[in-house]
Length: 417
Image 1: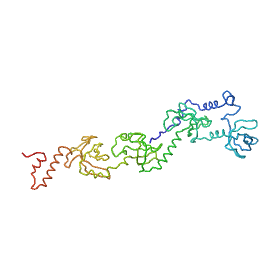
Image 2: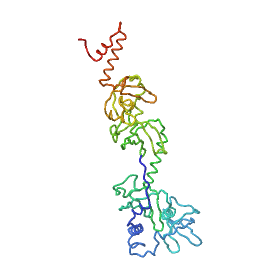
Image 3: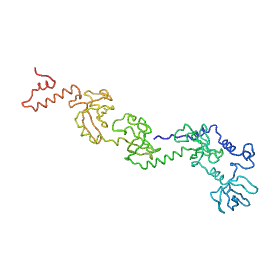
Image 4: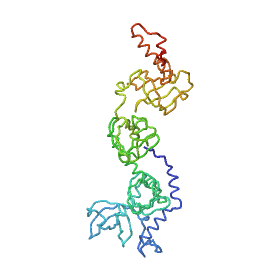
């Protein structure tokens, strides 16, 4: 779930438009589209008929139909005609339309409804509007587009949600874009497809997250692995994070040890924050909890083998079995006073420990490396004292008692001569 960095739009547009003249693009496009000898074509006087820039929008009322002409009254003693084909259906007398003046034929003005719609859209366009535009060209800064007859520009970084290395693949495409900036004096429009895609992504995220609740199970695909966890795509544009601590009941040093990009996984939703922009997932929650029946496998005062997995100033954490760790306090590591637990044990080392107490509810186990007499478990000293206790216990039960010297000799492995 990566956050988008704020972008200085003014700087981005300025850099992208460096050396690009949108007004000249408009003129070149008009010159290419005008037929030879037509008004406005290169080398031909443009005074005979106004160009799109000079056309005036007028409101008029339908007063009649004559063949293919729709007769429009624009004002006192001023009429014009427009081709009936420019209407979805022949208009009725009395209907009012906004029309563009294209020229004059005697006393009649030549009008266009389609051109009026284009000009009106340019006049009414404002920042934040969503428009349709066609990609007509490419330059070093981004894409050249047309909104009707009007030129527009899109910075390369606004063509997609991600970085696009090859903008040429968009040539000829129709895009739904958001208007970022309008400069009518310079006839410049700056568009963003990324803004529309981001809104669509956010909408889908909202729909997806609305159906999620803590504790629900979801399936997804691993899209990215970091040192702190793995990102899982739940639906297009919606990702959740499985923190390394929630990957498995077993200790996981690196997420790459258990997952790969492209893996399909099932997880539990742990939390949803920031309106769905952050979704916490867990995989270990779907595994059996080894603490549930731990007391049936490990009892207090039992001696077990474990692996030192983490050293702290106050002691060492020892993994007794996958998903179960106990704390070996520094005071329980040696008979001698230690400045730090690493003076006696190291990470990865296998040690014998005695279980002092177990609290399954709090998932805490206290451990000691010392036996009841304070000797380090597994040492020769501990073996000797253990043997002495065993002989003493037998002696107490034997009739007539047992010579203490004999007991100690037996404990130390000596025999009578």
